[in-house]
Image (cartoon, rainbow, N blue to C red; front, side, top):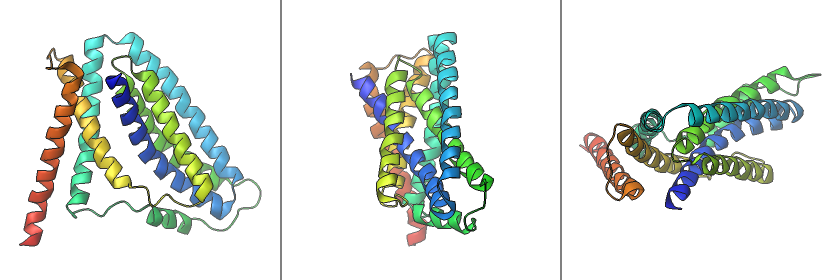
Length: 240
């Protein structure tokens, strides 16, 4: 039960972050040029992503030995998590500006002119590209987080639920979800993915963890403490 909840939570939070960024693009196109083209582009991207999840998810789970799968998925999760955690540390330390969905929305709107006559291929392609690229990261998170320990169903549910929640919120407010604490979510997801990656990569190399899956909590505490120390060390020169 604990493992399933952790897999679900990691997939949900990671997918929510990427879905928020995709939503910003679709809203910018829809409110600027009309809704038909961006909605069609969104549907096309979601269909392509669903095919990837079904095909590669089953391929990974059924064709790769368990130990090799844990090593592969663990390594990828570790690299992916460290990437998010690294950016979160830099943002927390004030070295890199925090991601601003309102600014991203305005930048996208500025790239667009008024409603296009006839078929709006620009709006279609822009929505397709945005949703597909952000969705690829969702697919990676879902497959990687759920690819071991038979957790793929929980990860898929978490990813789909996050996309639905973000989409419904976007339809209700019809504006970028600027109040969503995206940078905080990325920080949390970075810690979780890095911890999961460390756990599974070590198991793939034959290591045995004390308390089994509960050890991930200890890893999360260690990574979080190390990241906060890094924030303090990076900030120190700026205060001198």
